[in-house]
Length: 353
Image (cartoon, rainbow, N blue to C red; front, side, top):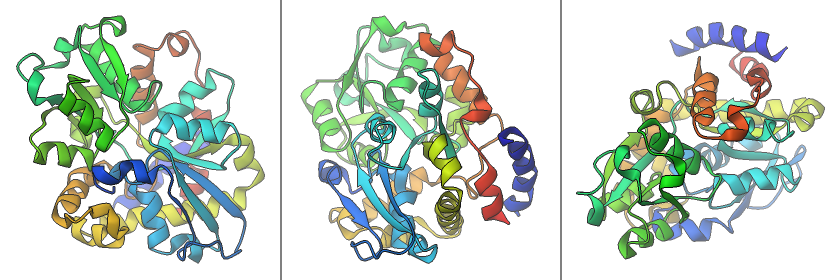
């Protein structure tokens, strides 16, 4: 059973414990990569994975796993595809275009209320990795989420995880979701442009967009959720975000392939935990730095604390996510969610062994 697997894994976790920059974000939406050489080599079963932004540091394990050769080492032919927002990756998965999605775990809860059975098979993170940025022009008007009322707030896409988290921060601070305007601005250059033009007063985004905004002095950090501590302060607990999630039916029918995928990702997470941001940046595609290797490495360094070292779902993480979603989402607030069906630790346990 998945619940018993979770309990066993928490015990095992105790033993285990001893994007381009913004100028490339739009290009990444059309990027496809297969195998270490760019072409499928026919080894093993072909797997397509849609990533909610290949160039985003929060989803870095996807491309890094490929660059390290760990998919090939497991005998897999993995094709990585990219969409600018996690909600679009979710759509690609549910429609059957891909077998897996790299995106936020919270989509699994949302989909369950819609009759879709999807589960996280390996958890990349225990914090959102998200940052609420206030435009330099609006810095005097917005000093906390209490000031969101009447403001235009940027999110990657409507129904995305940035949309979810923005609504939670508002409601938690006494602002109803009807009292501000969410604006879908994507990430990278479109987010930066929205700040510059005043299309948004503030917005939620990730590195390397955060690093670029701060370098250009276009905005300041209001809420930083790139670390477990930041997640605790903003959300009241660990918030598992980036993950590989798949349709439960597909997982149950392809366990050997899923195990190989999880093996590869767990190797990457362990590798990340023992290497510096500069070393990680050096492994990523050259164009991700867009000529500023220092800025890109700093973006990685700022986000590294969000990642797990073993792919294990953090204890009480699902409960925090459920609490956040129930605060503003009427579909989830009035629904009974079986959290044990939103993730499995079966594969990370075996990968640890």
